[in-house]
Amino acid sequence: MLRTWNYAWWRPTVGVILVAVLALVVAPIVVLPVLAIGIWLEGGPFWDGFERALSMQEITPVGLLYLNLALGAMILVTWLVVRLLHGLRPRWLTSVVPRMRWRFLAACVGLSVIALVAQVVVAMLVPGDDTVPAIEPNPVTATTVLLGLVVILTTPLQAAGEEYVFRGYLLQAIGAIFTNRWVTILITSLLFALAHGGQNFPLFFDRFMFGFIAAWLVIRTGGLEAGIALHVLNNMLAFGIAILVGDVGESLNVGEISWWNIPVTLTQAGVYAVLVVWVARRMGVQRETDPPRFARAAEPRVSSDLGS
Image (cartoon, rainbow, N blue to C red):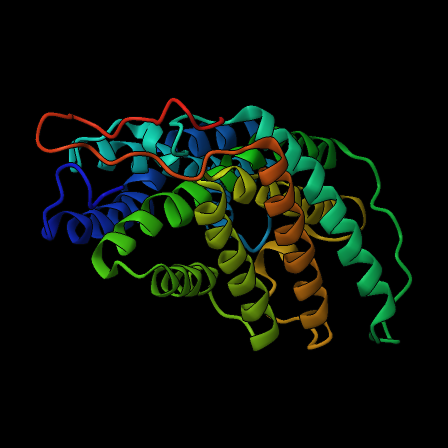
């Protein structure tokens, strides 16, 4: 899309830098008042609470709210860059229609559940750590209830924010630079995995494969719906389990998983990719849009004879 109607060699390069700066520096600063108000409402030493929340070692409801809103703000970051730098309406980041295809998104949510079930089944079959202690549910407290509400209400924003950055803007910008879809998929997948910090190889592979499948499905389906659906379900499941029987801080800061997780990762990725491609064909999901013709078109137009 970024090589069609007003392409210039410098635009995608500048755009990648802008998105990085705005997402990593500006967005967290803009959302800071939310964190400050939350810490004030919690009571206690303000600066201690502020430092504890920013360190992410101990996850509180207000700390998780701040994190999810800062990541969700990346949606606005990509919209701003694609509008001001490339002269395109932000909706072109979502799909080739161009808009969110809600019916297809709902179908992908259902397919995500199937893929997650397949993942759990395989996880139960592969060898595990026999020293894992018995699981006991966490007590229901005001903190766990608030954490649950934050997860339900803001995790979709957090997951969508990451998708708009990596599979929305970066996939298009890096694709405009290299013009090879496989190089683009590999680079964006690598960046997505590295953005999660320190990790052993199985965990890196898990995140890399998620980015790879999500990016490939963007090209195969012409939109972000499949990646957003699986990302939301993945994160809500991880946070939900952590709140019920684990620790949210450990869930966010995990840096190592078993090598036996690799077949589990491949199961989820493979099952989901096959199901999404099959359903997209059955639904007649549009994969492409016409580029502008000569200099008369201000923006790409949608072919009227293709299904939505």
